[in-house]
Amino acid sequence: MPKLDPNSNDFRAAGHRLIDWVADYLDGVDRYPVLAQVKPGDVAVQLPAAPSGEGRPYDALLADFESKIVPGVTHWNHPAFFAYFSITGSQAGILAELLIAALNTNGMLWRTSPALTELETVTLRWLRDALGLPGDLWGIINDTASINSFLALAAAREALGLDIRGLGMSGRDVPPLRVYCSEHAHSSIDKAALALGFGARGIVHVPSDEQFRMRPDALQAAIARDRAEGALPCAVVATTGTTSIASVDPVRAIGEIAKREKIWLHVDSAYAGPSTVCPEFRWLWDGIEHADSIVVNPHKWFFTPIDCSVLYTRKPEVLRQTFSLVAEYLKTTDTAEINYMDYGLQLGRRFRALKLWYVMEHYGLERLRAVIRDHVRYAERLARELSARPGVEMMTQSLSVVVFRLTAGDEATMALMERMNASGRLFVSHTRLRDRYGIRVAIGNGATEWEHVARVLSFL
Ligand code: PLP
Image 1 (spheres, rainbow, N blue to C red):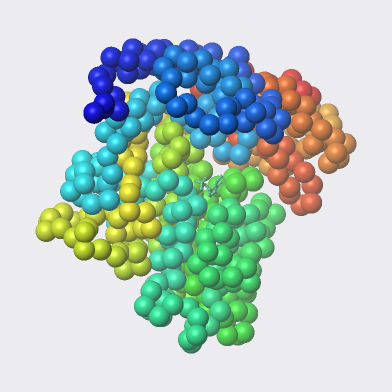
Image 2 (spheres, rainbow, N blue to C red):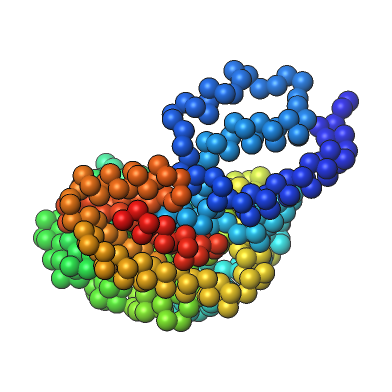
């Protein structure tokens, strides 16, 4: 019987070529348009109706990859990628991904890869300490912040003590549940609440102040109103570094309300959390001792390739109570403390800790800090220079995010964004603040230099 891979000869040769390809790609990524300049269907139409029957050599695949796939790629690893939040790969992260695929290990139980479980535990302690987070936080890696916030809100729901795990939510005495977040919270919070049965009516978008931060007085009023109407407040989500503008909700004031009201406080710091590796940004954590759970994305601003999102909680036992379900075939006599499958939805788990470990260990915290500091400096400089341009109105700048508009109005602003993105020289996205469109420049790629950021100014 033929084996799938008879030997490693082709693999070795193709692998060496691929590493060269990747190195050339990273060195020369500027020759590609940042935003793919293709129309819907352009990629699909080039692909055959069915895969190869006999198989094709790696060289032929690489040729197709270059000619058919790469033109349809938006280059998130480009230093002039300023849209959304960059998910910056790094050379260390790319190498780790190769090892992760080589081992192809699945960390559902400790015994299915002790190194995966233990490295995850250790790197998350390192990360927690490096970010100046409290020492009683326990962490787990999942793919995205969206999933981690879902897990946190599921735990919050279980923590109500209504035995929702046992009895479900319908046909019984569960009042309408409420989750509170600011009007600038990420849509993943709403999605999680919808999936957990809170219903769209159960999601309360609390108004924010002039700096786009959740207003604690408005939160308190919303909770009081809901209680008076017979609803049951379950959780509040504070965002430190909102998606549109990187505004920072006042965690301390929100946390004090959460404590008083006995509701779960989840802090979404998916984007900005990693910046707290620099002590000067730790003000973001003011009041974090009140948080029941926190999400931080190394795949957003910590140079770890997507996917790597960390959920910290000081109540892992609630997460476990919510999700642990050990089928017969998964029972073991191991004395290990953690089987990570007990703390979430997923059974199979990738070895994501390996890339986080590679990134932290290869670059070292000082280098990571220096790059993050540069990003914030570039954002501040861009904001200064934009403010000095006639016809430009600065809307906000916070951390590494800058939002501006043209005084000529929404149409002109959006047309400018289209022009920028069509040039291929940079990629920016937009947001809407106080009923006006703004162009959003979010800096976060490990290779970004001022020259890349200055491209924004060259369009004005
Ligand atoms: N939270 C915030 C504040 C975000 O900005 C984002 C994405 O940009 C998310 C959550 C969702 O992140 P993910 O793509 O990891 O689910």
